[in-house]
Image 1 (cartoon, rainbow, N blue to C red):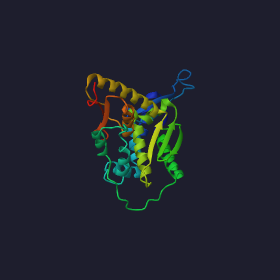
Image 2: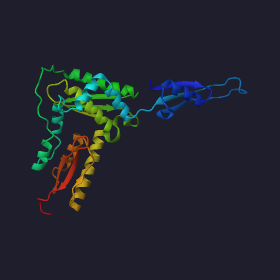
Image 3: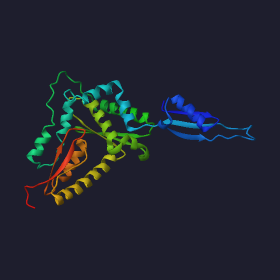
Image 4: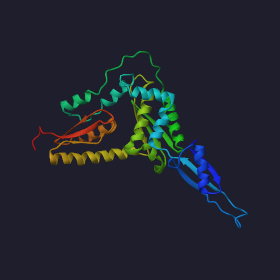
Length: 286
């Protein structure tokens, strides 16, 4: 139960009843006063109790944890934490595109190639699900999350060759919790959903999950960051490491700076702390 509606002589008493029912402390809830108490005529006739709605606070970690508590999600979580298992194949496929600059330096290409996992031998024949079956899986998964948050939403799913685009739309003031800081929660949902799908398919299918147009807005922000940072690198002659990003966001940076004269980029580190480093191309004349 995520909320409790209680009545009592005072607001504090009604809140305390709700806290006991939810088995939580006061700092773990939000309180909505539905009706103020009133004493009535001479404090005796027509008095009304206070009525409050006490709702548990939900943060991004709660969302991810609630998903991973599911038996199937526990299996996915285990595989994601042990890349030597079957999941390494689709992780490698994703990371192999971490570099988007067509004329990347040999060192950069070599560094990115290190991340590509060795192909896993197929142990048993996989029954390939249809697009309709995959769509049903996606809808059930997203529905579970959004219902837990008690958020109204619409969902659109598009199948484009080897990519599946999932778009969650709702009130922007409500869907922020689905996105998380810098898309952290949205990226977690995307990662788990990708694992669920690719465990069932023979060939890797990239899954992109967006919410209220966040990805496009974030892409514009990343492009501005890339441009400003590249200019700073050219002026100072010093390489600059950007904040850690997922593979999808790193590709945006690489692509944005691919044709900028005097600049080359590469990714360094291991996920989830892998970052793009922007360098000045010293092989070119100033």
